[in-house]
Amino acid sequence: MGKFSRLGNDLYSGRRSIDFVGRRHLWYAISGVIIIAAVLGLWFRGLNFGIEFVGGAEYTVTMPSGQATQANADKLRTAVADTGIPAAKQVVVTTAGTNSILVQTEPLNPTESNTISATIEQTVGVTKAQLSIDEIGPSWGKEVAKRSITGLFVFLILVVLFIWAYFRQWKMSFAAIVALIHDLVITVGIYALSGFEVTPATVTGVLTILGFSLYDTVVVFDKVRENTKNLKASHQTYAEAANLAVNQTLVRSINTSIVALIPVGAILYVGAVQLGSGPLKDLALALFVGMAAGAYSSIFIATPMLAHMKSREAGVQEHEKRLKVRRRHEADRYASVPTFTDDMAVGTDPDAVPVAGAPAAATSGGNRPTPSTEALGRGRVVPPARGPVRPSGASGRVQPTRQAKSKRGKK
Image (cartoon, rainbow, N blue to C red):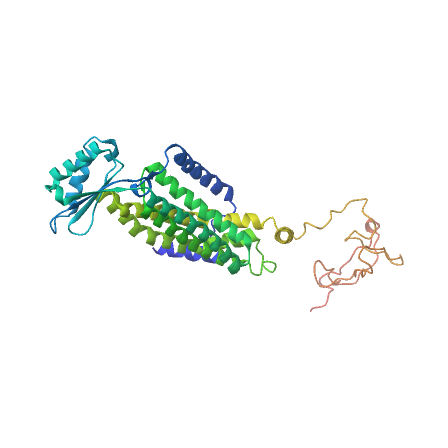
């Protein structure tokens, strides 16, 4: 836990950084593969709609108080599924209160319906008076689906308007909508691939995860706006500031997702493994997949896509060019100093010593001051003579001479 805490502090301060924005093409490719698999699952397998959407038969078994238990429900599920009737293979059995059990199947003909009724009576020992049969039409489910789709479009429009009004950037709205659609397609595709039943509880779960995904994306975008508020005065590009925002919120996103996924995973386990069927399972699967996809899209899709779109703006490109030039000069301060050549114009040689009486050479910098030839206290300085220097004929040059030590005065 201590290492994780230090990692979070390092990511927030920028001492460590994971390049989410720079590797956006890798995340796009991963999401593209997942979305293609989801679309293929929808195309070839389709969704397994519940009887609320396609219609069916519902048997209500009234039992003495306290006998409508999960054990009796499991017995009924096994007995009905073993009748060999194709329409009763995916039977849904749930308890309703303490004295009723509901058995739901796909549409049955009269002969199949009588077989199911007899099986129920023999399994739990009830009479015909305790068993009621209702035919459920698909109209109710279609009405639920129609209203859900209408609510989804209204939700998306409100999301666009809200993000635009809050951040004043339509590109953030577009990136958030893409992330929401990404989560929605993946969740629906998982239902198609897994064969889980789509019920009104599933629709409720899908609409719920859209809110969770949007919340996570808005938190990251808020940090991006904070880091890019004074972008021209900073030493970061827009992509670097956006990547820092993702790193700063990474630990928060992971912690939030784990805390949310653990109880939802427990509900999914109870609904799918222990209970076997029911709205609990349908709701939990949508929440589990949608929350995981929402956390992924807010980190790997929404922010990299926003930085990708912002990198095409003229102001952002000009700022990046200035930063590149500044960083190149900081890396090598002498990179712009020209190399001396023999054909260089007079006056451009920085080591040239002016000749006395000669006119000052023209320089490109205007009235350049003549450098002094006297020692300035730095570098090699000629030491003062320690004795008289007289002319000498040795080697045709003047050589210094010194008197014998005995003739020199004591110091």
